[in-house]
Length: 453
Image (tube, rainbow, N blue to C red; front, side, top):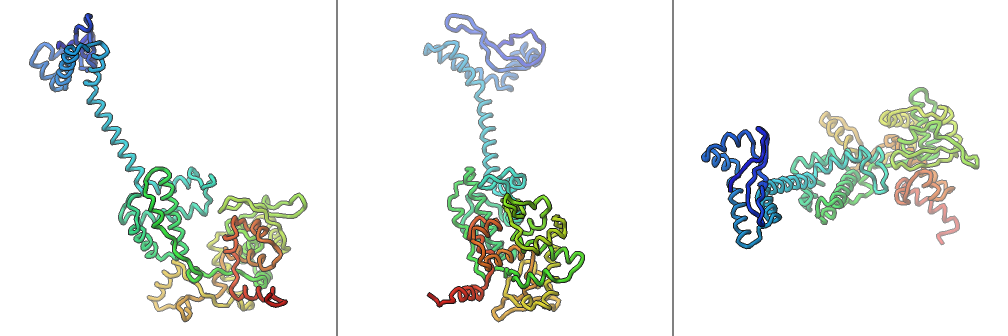
C-alpha cells in the first residue's frame, strides 16, 4: 500500500492517502493519519528512512491492519467505500478512543473519590450553609445560631477525622463508638453530645440522598444519649417578686443599661439575639389599637408579634426612645450576675443553692484552680456542684422567666403563649416552663381547693 501526501504545501500537518480500486472506481482514500509535511519530505526519498519514520510514528502497524482488513473484505466481497471508511476509522482511532476512555474513566474515578470523600463533603456542605446555598428542609436559609452550631460541629468533626480518615461505607458501630468517645474526651455535656450526633446524622442522610453512598445502616449506629435532668446545667427563672426587686433596684450607667435590656427580655419572652436589637421600627399598633413589637426572630427567621402588656416594658422602651442600646452578650452575662449578686443581699431567694452541672470551660478552670489549691465550687453529698441562683442568671434566663411567669399566671392559653415565644411545638415550649417539683405540687394543691376529686 503506497502512502502519499496529497498537498502542495511545504509545512504543516496533513493526512496520508492511498489509491485503490473500490467497486470498480479508483479512489483516493484518506487514511486519517496525519504527518508533518517537512518531516515527510525529508524521509520519503529513502525507503529505509521512511520505514523507520513510519514505525516510529506507529503508522506501519496501522497500515498493516488496514491492509489485512481490505484483503478480508475483498475475499468476502464486502469492500465498499462505506465499509472501507468505517474500517479505517476503527483501526486508526482505536488508540485515541482507548485514550479517551481511560481519561474518562480516570475522571470518573477522581470525581467518585472526591464525592465519596467525607471530609470534602462536610467542608463543602457547611460552606454552602454559610453562603445560603444549602437550605433547611423548608427551603429557608439557616439562621445565624444554626450556622454557628454547624461551624462548631465542623471544627470538632474534622479534628476527629484527622485521627483516622474514613469513607461513608466505613461508618459502623466501632467508628461511631470512637467518635462518641472523642466527644466525651473533650468534656462535652450530654446536651452538646446530642447536638453533634444529630448533625452528623443529618450529613449522612444528605450524602445518601445525593447518591454518595449506600450505607443504609450508618444512621442507625448514631444514637442520641439519654439526657436526664441531672445531666443538664440548672436553668432557672426569676420570679415575679425577684423581677420587681430588680426593676426597682437603683442603678446607673452601664449597669442600668444591662439591667434594663435584661428586663426587656423578661417582659417579651424573646431570645437575647432578638430583645437586644429592638428598635423604633419594630414597635407599632395593631388594627384594634394594641401596641406591639413586631420582630423577625434571628434564630428561626419567624416573625413574632408581642403585645406590650406590662407598663414596666413600656417605660423601659421609652427610656431609650424604643432603640435598645447594643451590649455584647458576654458583657451582659457577666454584669447581670454581679447585679443579681448584690440584689441577693436584700432578696434572699437569689442566694438559694441549686444543684447544677459545670460547663466545659468551668471544669477546665476548676482543674487549673485545684492545682493552685483554690476551691471554686461547693458540692453536695452526691458530688453535684452547687451554685447560688444569682450565679445561674444569664441572658437566656430572661426568656425562661417570661414564659414561666406567663404560664403560672393562668391567664393565657398555650397557643397564645407560643405565639409570643415563637415556639413551633408544645414540646419545645414546655422546655421553657421551669417549675420545680415543689412548685408543681403547690399548683396541684391550689387547684384542689374542694378536695382531690
